[in-house]
Image (cartoon, rainbow, N blue to C red; front, side, top):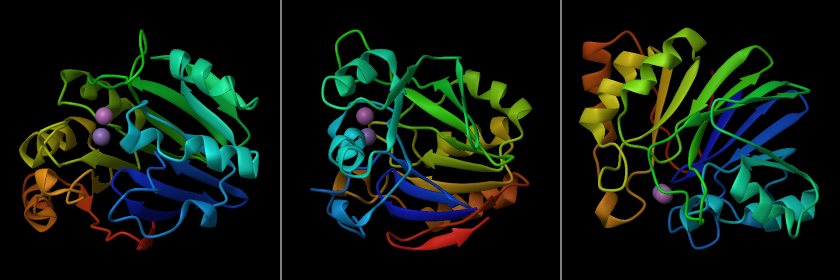
Length: 220
Ligand code: NI
Ligand code: MN
């Protein structure tokens, strides 16, 4: 699968005819590598309703006809202006043409009354991607080991989410093959050294860390 980092927590992951866009905070994102009008996903996945995750989700989905995945209360909000919404909930899994989308708990505000933030475990043609969304470190991440995660996208920015030390502990629990850090260096408050994170993870675990600058892609 081809994984493109657009910036912050926004990734475009492509496999065959499918292109999955995660947390499309593009407009107003100081490090975004593309314009919202330049991405043409088949699926848009939104971990929660904070502006730096919901971002351009609705505009992009309306323009492309992409289906939006999110948790229930957030999905209800999207449904007010977009018909193609799959609103599952924590612990549940939605079957899709490419595999499945599972809603995993994230310990974070949802940004909407009564709602829940989530992470996603996506089975994309047999390879599993975990996009953690915004979350603190939780012991629940041990549950992800049994998912055989191929690539884990983990926040390391600290302050609002896990920082690098806690993200290292998350890697030890999840045991993914690859890790890509996210949610750092977007704003001064989130400044982190991804190289130091990579060194720590690769010293203490068997996972490999791929650092992507906004606009860069990797095939994993
Ligand atoms: Ni947030
Ligand atoms: Mn955030």
